[in-house]
Image (cartoon, rainbow, N blue to C red):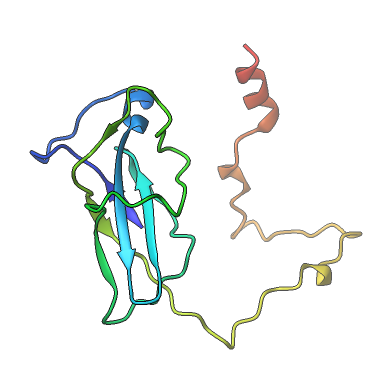
Length: 142
């Protein structure tokens, strides 16, 4: 799910992390078998819906206007803060859906030999994108 809770006017509020994470909105997904309520914050976020609602003609997606209890957690929604603000709306941008494929099997990692060095062709090697961990550790300890 992709959401970004702006102000009622559609403007972006420049809040610090602590305040933005305490401005919470709630989405409610419901079909005839179950209901899901998930909080998000004012961040531009992508997060998963952990339960698997069936996307059919009975699925309703709406703002949690019934103030139902959360059924899922989002790490950057800080509802425990004394200065929390419950937003009266939910700004949904998109759902990213996938259909289960029964032909797809998980890869068994035990087939990968661990006692030999694997050489990656330099044309497809993207290890330069990974920062030097020793350098980062030095920066963090400053």
